[in-house]
Image 1 (tube, rainbow, N blue to C red):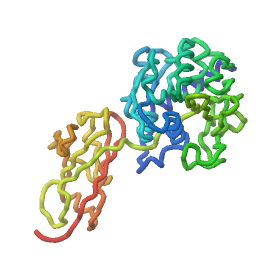
Image 2: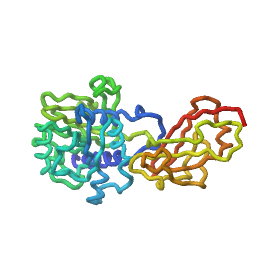
Image 3: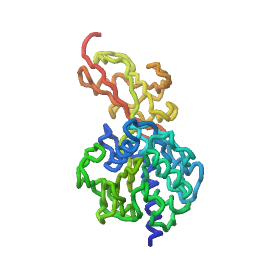
Length: 360
C-alpha cells in the first residue's frame, strides 16, 4: 500500500504544477491559500534582499529526460503557477530541469521535480544551506535525496541523511484538510485554523518528526505537518501541496484614443497589448480577444508595434468603435479590460480612459 500511495502523491503534484486554471480574477489575493503560502515562504527563504530563485520544475525536467510516467510537455514555463507566484513575491526566476553543480549564485532554490533530485545532491544542498542559502522543497522531493528513483515506486519514508539541514525526519502520506497553525505566516492574511489545502481523494504528501527549532506553519488533520520552516543556518521551507493559481496572465494595455467621445462616428478603437515575458504577440488567438467581455476584436487589421518604445513588441488589434461606445458609461476613469488567450492560457489587461459626450 505504501508504494501505491507514493504513486498518487507524485501524479497529483505534477498535475497541479502543470495546469493553470482559466478562472478570471483581478489580483494576487485570489491565489489559493496554498499557492499564496508557497510564494510567501519562498520570499522568506530568499532572505531580505530577494534576488533570483532557481526553479527546478517538472516541465523542464521532463523535456530534458522524457519519462513514460510523467505528464506530457504542456505549456510555456512563464505560465506555470509557481513561477508566477514567485515573481509576484519579487523574485526573479531562472528555470532548470536538472540541479546545477553550483547553487551559490541563487538566493533560493525551489524544487518541485522529484526526478531531478538524486542522493548525490544531498551534500550539495547541505553545503548550500549551511552557507546561508534558501531552499524550498515541495511534496515528495525530500524522499529523492534519500533514494535513487525514477518512477513512482519509491518505498522510502525515513530521512536520515537530510533531516539535519532539512528539519524533518520522516515522510508520510495523508489525506483530508490542512490548516494553518499560526497567524499571518510570512506576512500572509492566513489565520490559525484557516484551511490551506484539501486532499479529498488519494494520498498527499506530509512530513513529521520536526527538528528542534523548526516552526510548523500548517498541519494536516491527522497531525502530520503540511508546511514548516527551519533555519539552522540557511532558510529551509517545506510545503506538501500547491494548488493552481486562479489568475490570468497579466498583460499591459494601451487604448487609443485616451478620450472616447460617444458622439464620434469613427470606425475603430485600437488596443496595444504587451504580453508578459516569455509570450509573443504571434501566440495570441485574436479570435479569443474581447473588450469588456462583450466586443470582439476584429480579425483584420492586426499588427505588431512598440508604442511605448520599451523594446517589447505589442499586439495591435482593433474593435468596432460604435459597438464599444454602446457599452461605455461617461466618466473620467472608465476602465477598459481586454481578455483573451495566449499559447492556450488566459490573459487580461486594463487601461482607464475618459468617456465624454460632446463635440463633433
